[in-house]
Image 1 (cartoon, rainbow, N blue to C red):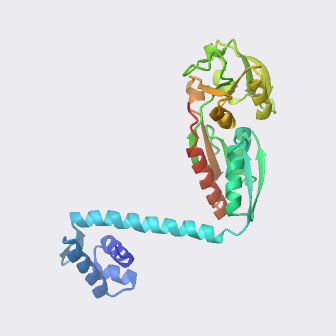
Image 2 (image 1 turned 90 degrees about the horizontal axis):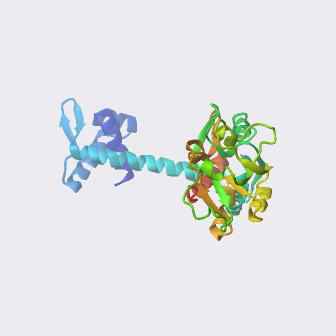
Image 3 (image 1 turned 30 degrees about the horizontal axis):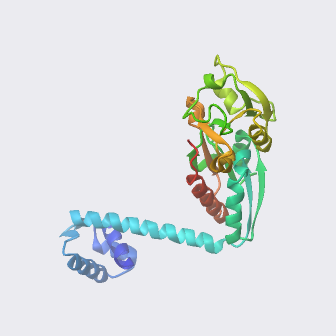
Length: 301
């Protein structure tokens, strides 16, 4: 349908009057009326019922109005995206992320993004989930990539993905063929686990506190590289999401089995930005790239 008709039709439907709509559109009533009549003739149906008080939509008109408003909305959204791309010449983005996304995922995204927008520069820091939320809320980070289970009131989630914690192990481990595991199953295993460098309890500690099955941990580390080497060497099994081990799992050097625990099974990783400030073109475009990359990952099995 012609763009002028879409605007005319939408406004007439809003106002319930061709005369009122024409005044808002700054177009003559005759022009608007002719366009509607010609479209009705082309479609072979009446879109409006004319009355002395104005016009009302017919059933056919209601269907056309739905299409009309969706088309206008999509057009405005496309214009916004094109404006973002046109305005994006340079900029600097501060990114705060949990350690695991800096292995493979984030570097791939930034390399691709940088090939399209080479003038954009980055500062990347790794931190604990609550620190990332705080950094975004206070404006020290433009984009955060973190667990979204404890959302800061001044932060909004742009997109998120289910990323349960499970057991990372070598493919020759006895548990490698299992479809799921419980805390009781892994109680006798030597564990490789994340540790909060500030001495606070981790997500896992909070989730399993009070459970009768105690975990036997052979290595606490806040560095995923160390954890990966320990697991590959057969010195223990890891308690992590798939995201930092994704390529190893895809290549078959490691495997992942979900842990059947309500909290750990329903964790989500997301892209977060400030809720109190506008989103700049670089933030919007990179946020969309991260969202698309996360959507392509299979993290739950």
